[in-house]
Length: 440
Image (cartoon, rainbow, N blue to C red; front, side, top):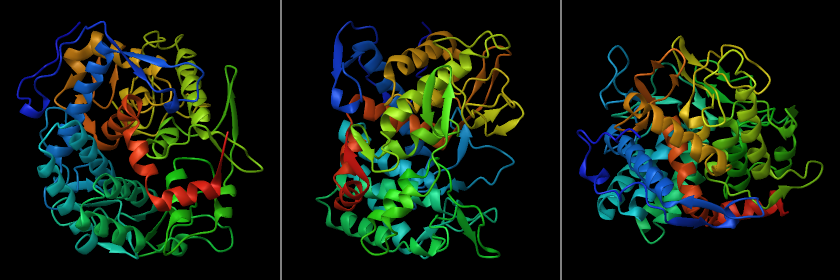
């Protein structure tokens, strides 16, 4: 096994327990739609602890302490990328950051009061300074001041991921009056019906000040579950529950696996990083258990990668995973379960990392295999690089914030279920969940 690099690593990532202990940790079966408990070994838990601390370090170092906005991407060694807007932040990442702060506080990776101060500053900025329209935020913003950059759109899904972190922080720091009130203000200000097409009942993907609402709408099952639940849950500007049942659930069958959702694997991961949907299903006509659907989608995705071994022999039962990511030809939205387009043998660690909460029995060994065999090349200051190709030995020099973010949240849900628990404590979320879902 390669040795974890600790060069330049801050004290918050120091003093991990030694890897290799034979002790096991039992993960509660309530976290999974399974009949048996999954046994996370002490060695695997230590590995996930190290990976999670490194990812938190990304959020701590690459966010502005006054705005809470996080750089969209950086070099794997922590340096900024020359030739880009050096202050380009992804608004959705602040939702991951706020959640990462809760995880770090709970695990005492840093002094909790210092974390609390960062959370307060972030919420103050979002409430009073960050550029928005009717509570919706632009997709990309300047990390230092929150101003729109790159002519980006008001993004419904990026705002939803941001709000998920806001509500998570509100519940985790529920005893802090300022945090609680700021979070409530930010959420209650969002005008959800403004983004709803009154004819179709679908939410639009976004809005441009120059052109108005985007014609594209959330018409198919994708990553938008968190958006619709937040919109239905709004205490001030809700949308009808019926909107949940309007978008198409396209059935997929691959290698004997049957599930819903034609998008890359990340479309199954993002919403359920916060929404605990195990043992729940929606009402008629669908009656879908979305958690179990994502378990099946993860297995199907592995099977899809294995079906490509004739062209890419490095894919195996412990080395697989392709989702929207960097490649050696640029950023690619690949990983559609029915399309081989653009796939070149690249492996994207967050494909398995983001599904740790769904299928740990295949995802943990996959991440461990990547680490055991390629750590010297792909594992560094912030954990795994965004992508690499084991056949050509191309290694992406960057980490991408949303990809490390989904890995952190999924790992924490596997280990403790805490992100689910904090989000589920929101009375608004509870109300929406009762209106949409039924116990399985």
